[in-house]
Image (cartoon, rainbow, N blue to C red):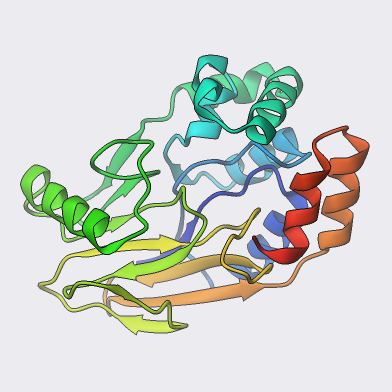
Length: 243
């Protein structure tokens, strides 16, 4: 079974289109989404349509929740709050209901767990060694038979493995069968690691191989749409910086 693991699309249609073209080239069996399909970008409806027609296994991100529950946005920064209000007003009811039905976490068979933010709390970030240790402990305690968790939220490519400290997100990495891993595929629609390319990964269950893909897309077109929608200019500017 070969999975494509996507996260943090954030209404960026240009990035999602380019990623799905690469996904098709890789002959994927199943698409996985770790949440935040919408928010920030100017094409929430189009991204929902494009993704959901692929029948992904998906979970709910905090920006997805704000698409039907604006109370969620009270925890956001000023730019995210403004974009959440715009997205809430723009999102079609049919997609709102699909998002409402998504779980915050999800087991995929006996293979792996999906969360958006963290196991400790759905809106926590996994950014440092101690947070990774706490979340691996939570994984072992709550799901003792599961050794792999995919997550998103931070927009940073990360592999937290059997030793303390983040392993560099190499383009290829083979997991050890009996170790615990927390893995972030990076962000498709708003990367924050200094590389503006859209990021996702593939996971081959039989070989336990992780492979990252960094995909170029039309950033200027995505920026233009953000400006034309009247969203905060900062949300357009950061796309070119990958920050």
